[in-house]
Amino acid sequence: MSDQPTGTPTFADVNRDVLRTLEPPGHRYFAWMSVVALILAGGILFWTGQVWWGIGMAGKRVPQMWALYITTFVFWIGIGHAGTLISAVLYLFRARWRTSIYRAAEAMTIFAVLTAGLFPLIHAGRMWFAYFLLPYPNQRYLWPNFRSPLVWDVFAISTYLSISTVFFIVGLVPDIAALRDASTGWRRRIYALLALGWEGSDNQWRHYRRAYGLFAALATPLVLSVHSVVSWDFAMALVPGWHSTLFAPFFVDGAIFSGFAMVAVLVLPMRHFFGLHAYIRDKHLDAMSKLILVTSLVLTYFYLSEIFTALYSGDHFEKASLFWKVTRTYAWALWLMYFCNCIAPLIFFVKKARTHPVVIYVVSILVLIGMWFERFNIIVPSLAHGFYPYTWGIFVPSPTDTGIVIGSFAWFFLLFLGFIKLMPSLSIVEVKETLPPPMRDTRHGAHH
Amino acid sequence: MAPTTETIVGVFAHVDTTVRALEELKAKGYHDLTVYTPVPVHEIEDVVERDRPVSRVRLFTLLGGLTGAFSGFMLTIWSAMQWNLVTGGKPIASLPPFVVIAFELTILFGGIATLIGMVVLGRLPKFRPSPGFDPRFTRDRFGVAVHCAPDRGGSVREILGAAGAEEVKAV
Image 1 (cartoon, chains in turn orange, red):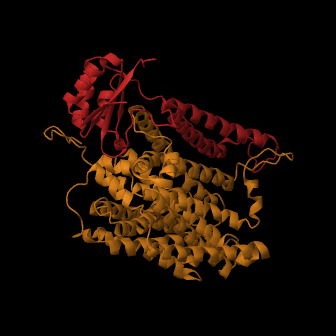
Image 2 (cartoon, chains in turn purple, cyan; image 1 turned 180 degrees about the vertical axis):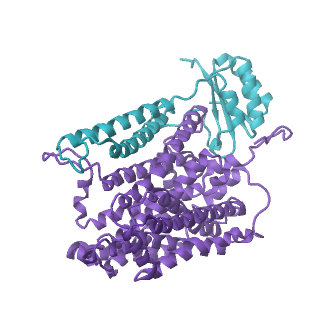
Image 3 (cartoon, rainbow over the protein chains, first blue to last red; image 1 turned 90 degrees about the vertical axis):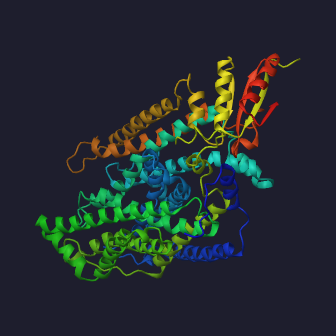
């Protein structure tokens, strides 16, 4: 990259550059905001229609009761996996390249889980009864069935949202303190409140560092558990195409794969518009591309073993379901998924492609499309072709559910656009940690 | 009434000079120090943490996690016992599915307890800045605040200055 500044930034440069990203935005930013807000308003309108006229507006007919809502729900939960993977797992592995992208990825995680969380509620139709899912004392002695994967899901996702949010906020505290000391006016007052009076004293750092390591240790098994639990929503049922022990690792890998694609989709424009080339360097793009490539290869392996299991099992219904998926009504979706998830990322075997922003961007978009269709292919065609012909049924999307799904993307991007202008999208502290610390006597310094 | 202690702050631009000052202060018997750094730095931590026990945050995590595991099993077993409905010929208190809930609550309670531990032990939130703090310490300067008897101020200033402090001030 020719526009990459040479030389390592100093500590003060990091503060200056991050502060620069928080300057009042220009017209282009507000134009984007307005577009996104309009799309979101459309989605809300469709949702209002669904509440008013009933869930039939979403084209729900037996056996296709899950369709787009649960597809999109699983998609967003999957997107939400990369952030905590980067912030917790890569932290434990001391992968230093994570520092410059982890803040954006963590924010993405929280917004993705917030988006995902909407779908079970929208899907429930009468969402004001959603509190039935929670265990609360009531005079009828009615408690949730804790043997149901759907209840596990409630616990897994609310835990994931809580812990990711805590992790995110804890990581932000020292950064907000840095912003507080560098800003004035109303911003300073807000940052002072949010920084909790952080000063960076040895006592604060001491407990902070220990707590951060523990959060990472807690979040690591959590990341793996959440998508496993989501996969059990399917795998615990007897539907052909779902009832498989393969599902938990298959879902976790797919989640990381799509999550990294979304990180690339968000971070590349951020780097371009904020001029963060000194921090998000080619080696970061290279590492991300490699992770996308690896998870793609693992996913291909899972696809193959899924097909192999269906054929080798000798189970008539499994084989019939597979045959129907690859050749009939939704075959185009299946082949599109294979292309996007297995073929397209192979370009990352070429070294140049791994650091080329446009290539990464295009592949990432394809991966996101592919991963959305993966969930579609798990849910819709499997339900369409169950055990008995009288339960067969084709799903056709309606304007209502399509509108709400598109609206969910707008909601996600609206949250993210708001975030990058209010909070440091690059971690001030962690980026500084990777820089050589300032030494007066350079002879014995820099043994990092 | 004259103050019984005085706080002298040295502002440093470099890690090695900060370490030098800390070593010198410790050798001279000044142990009531507060060090401000924009990022955690190994060299400085090595000196500061040398004679300190490990942070007790992990105790909070352990207790929180155990509470979570316990309450996860209690909630599921107790609520299943409220309505003895046998499904699939399985026991009422069927543990394997309840492990999922217990696991999630272990993480949830453990995480929240860790947060509480960090806030309590780190004396957060802090509503007014401590006297030794300087806004430069969140950018690129390192601070050493020495809390000492007023008559020792001169010697502390000398140590900080000799180690290479950019600025030494009493607060």
